[in-house]
Image 1 (tube, rainbow, N blue to C red):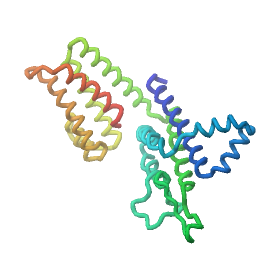
Image 2 (cartoon, rainbow, N blue to C red):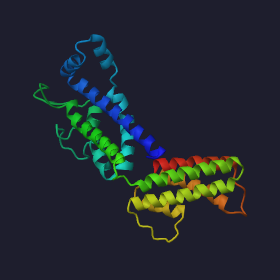
Image 3 (cartoon, rainbow, N blue to C red):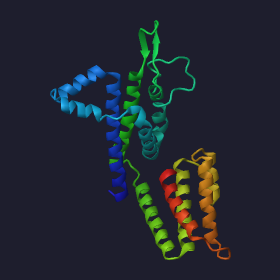
Length: 272
């Protein structure tokens, strides 16, 4: 396992641990008496241990969004075919005539929504209905870890990522030595290769034989893979690369190359 893959695997394990704590927090919030009784049995009625455990549970409403963002990025990278399913467990349907136990989602839980009838005496759906939805999200993250550890993972992506990291390191070394044009040119090659790979990964057709960064950005934007803001950001990096490629033009500035190197690294981590 490469150093990059190991680091990713460790982060994924940490994310799963956080998810399991969030799951316990949901149960504590929705089934307090039953949950506390289970905790008492677990710690043999040791009040200090019980209090320590309960006070250590995260506040779901305060910490879920950060977990969701990180978990979503993992699913998008490792299990892209399941990304829509992952999001659907959070978001309720756009068209929902009524809220029931079956279509009560995590977003409803975060809003504290409770559906009752009979003057409020009969609860139709409350936060407990979102627990199965979160369990499915957590299970998908666990499946991503299992995929990472299995031969089903496309190792070529890991090797390519390691290669790109090495090339960015080379660009940084060249920039520090004052070879700004060379550093910028390397970043340009990395961006082109990465964007081309992203197009292929999303089954987007590249008609040009030798497409440039601008061409690839148009394809990715049309395919809803990147946002307008991302397109403009990467295009600004491409503009700096173009300065480096034209020997008869002005000299690139040191700060421009530093921004290009940093921006290229950001693209590799956020566009996939």
